[in-house]
Length: 180
Image (cartoon, rainbow, N blue to C red; front, top):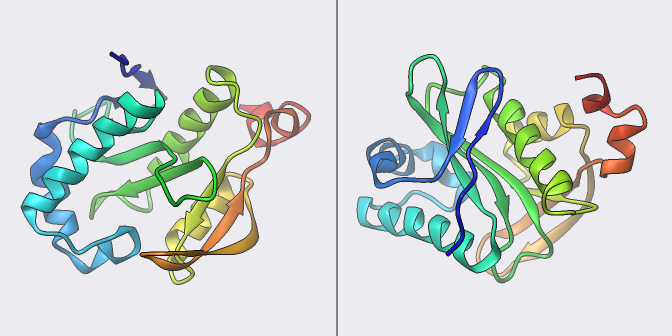
C-alpha cells in the first residue's frame, strides 16, 4: 500500500485526499467554475472523483493531495501529480475551490508538488494540461515558469494546451525556485 506523504509550505498543508473533502468538492463541481476540470459533476460523481484520486496514488505511487490552509484547517482544493490513461505525459495539476483563488495557493502548492516530483520521484520534466479558456490556470503556469509548448487533443476533453515546466536543472541554475 502506498503511503501518501504530507507536505507543508509556508501557508498550506498538502495531505491525503479524504471523504471529508466531499462537501467542498461537490459544491465546486456543481458550479460552472468546474467546467475546465471535467465538471459539472453530480455529488455521487464527485465522490467517485475523490476515490479516483486515491486510486491514482495506489496505481502510480503519486497523485493529488488535498490542500488546506495551515492557519484555519479549511480545505482549499487539490493539487498534485497526475498521469491517468489518455494523458500525454505526467502533469502537475491544481484545482482550487471557489473563494480560494487569487491568493497564490495554487502556485505555492504546485511548487511543493513539483519539488516532490523532481526531488523524491526523480522526474526530469513535467507538464500542465490547461483548457485554452482557463486564464487563471494559465497565469499559475506562467508564475511557475512554465511555457505553452503545444496543444493536445484529448479524447474526452477536446483541445488542451500543454504547458512545459522548467526541469530540475533549470530550476537549480537560476530558475524561480533557486531563489526561494
